[in-house]
Image 1 (spheres, rainbow, N blue to C red):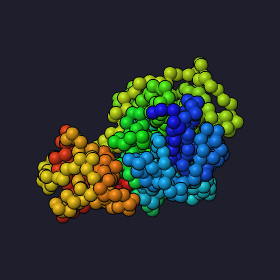
Image 2 (cartoon, rainbow, N blue to C red):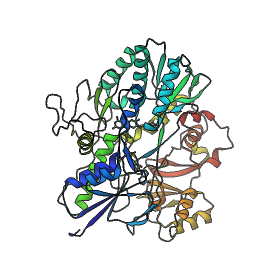
Image 3 (cartoon, rainbow, N blue to C red):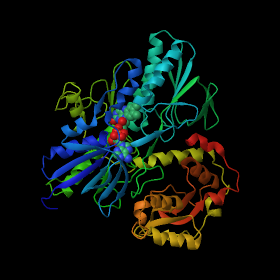
Image 4 (spheres, rainbow, N blue to C red):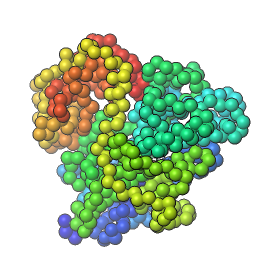
Length: 546
Ligand SMILES: Cc1cc2nc3c(=O)[nH]c(=O)nc-3n(C[C@H](O)[C@H](O)[C@H](O)COP(=O)(O)OP(=O)(O)OC[C@H]3O[C@@H](n4cnc5c(N)ncnc54)[C@H](O)[C@@H]3O)c2cc1C
């Protein structure tokens, strides 16, 4: 690219968007014009939401236009609704068509209720729920309370913090309160590794919090919390974290739950000049520090593509967290590698500045704005090297491993009907570059409700009639729109020897009607809801978030 202006459009006004704007500003290059497109006028610093009800912290918020200006960007109100990547046009509401040279999608995730009948704690908007709950505990109406990390929740720390702080709050007042923590994790704070898990267990024990690991909450009702395995826990109130979903954006291939697959430089897979960072990506850990690290990788890749002399570094996730206990914070650090033995826990900061959301540019930027002391260097005596090469490949698997483990544990019986017994053995296969018009014709000819998108024999996506409808609603031209832009990427799949019941539960849990059947990543069949509905439906999937 030459010395022309490069118009970088960032969709979002949260952690990843601001970190990317600040990282781009750090290149100090006049060629970059950065614009933030965000629907809400304010940036909320969410971590303090758990502390606010206990008067141990306050949620602060900042005008996005002010933050953007200080980060060298302009801000425009609006919501990204679709992208025509071939023409480099983003469509926003309001705002209409917006041309860009490079687009960074940093729209975050949408929290949805995960456990029926429970109070859902999404963050700053729900601090009132906790205040009310504390009042009920004070009045003696609530004596048993359960905090739930639901299946699929990607950031479990707030549930631990709420449990610890509630238990501490009640004990300080001499109140009799049973506090439970229910989580599908094998160990408390499993993602942070063994040291953090051990420390969390000790903290929970010291506060008298009962811990149920490996437990899937199904529903809260009548003073009870029902678990998927049939167990029942007594709880007058249940507070659950939400399940996260990605925001649907036309013209961008997303996973079944709305997340965008990206490569290690935050480039959206299959598209040119489109990047994504933060909770909206399909990376399994939804955390501010991780969002910021992805944003830094995106900013470097964008700068390099713009011709600025930068060697873009790939995203290498390091998880850092501050656990608010109500009795001094605990700093946690873990490498997101499988079988991780290296993790740290400390009462002293392990990084600097010791923010809850650790962003290379954002943390010092926000601490300067909020008047907190700013350090540009890590605290030398407590600092730890943080740029550790990591194996992140295993992380996105976590969620499905949980489903699989649940299915296997719940239904280990051999000899039950399998997917192979009922699957369509000649699924409709299409290429990522095929147009929607061509695919619609073939689907109609063969009377199929879906097509599998394969590249070099490997399954990369699924295109259903619902995806086709979305494309039509986006007014795309059927002879121009391609499968790779509108398909559901990285589809949930089953093997031919999985039980039919497993396939049914997967469909119900993920609210999908078609499951590709794979063998060594190759599509060998398709099983649809129609193929399995004759059999008895197992309603246990409510425990997986229905
Ligand atoms: C209670 C709570 C406590 C947490 N504690 C921590 C913590 O201690 N440490 C930590 O690292 N993380 C923490 N997190 C997680 C952290 O807040 C998120 O992971 C992080 O904010 C993700 O950054 P993001 O930029 O991807 O999304 P967000 O920060 O959510 O920003 C998304 C932005 O996109 C905008 N947007 C939405 N749709 C569109 C659209 N269509 N077009 C344009 N813009 C759009 C939104 O308005 C928003 O401005 C916590 C979260 C919660 C809820």
